[in-house]
Length: 158
Image (cartoon, rainbow, N blue to C red; front, top):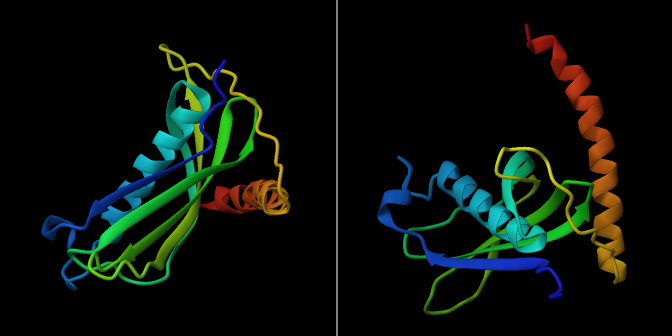
């Protein structure tokens, strides 16, 4: 059996239709690219169709300009029974210089599902390096924090 693919990088050029009224790539376009990379990463790990369950901690660090070469790097940092926590970084560069700069980063949780939309088991990911262990532990801390935030947000629901 082939080992699941833990990470993936999508690369493309930012196009004029991606620009907002301020002349920079729209945050919504960046979020779409993040979701696409998270899906490709989760599907590669699980071998299944996956759906987005959560996207959070998104930080827009620097703008992306039309014509920039954009790289969206995604990697599994934690697995539950059916969920995969994916860490994402978006970098951009002028394609002539290739000096990459971080523009955005976040965490997305994807869930593997079957043909009827029911959750299915995913392969367990085990951290190997010191960096893997730190990211894995951070994913667990973030889960605990999301539970608290979710409880606090209940005031806004009917």
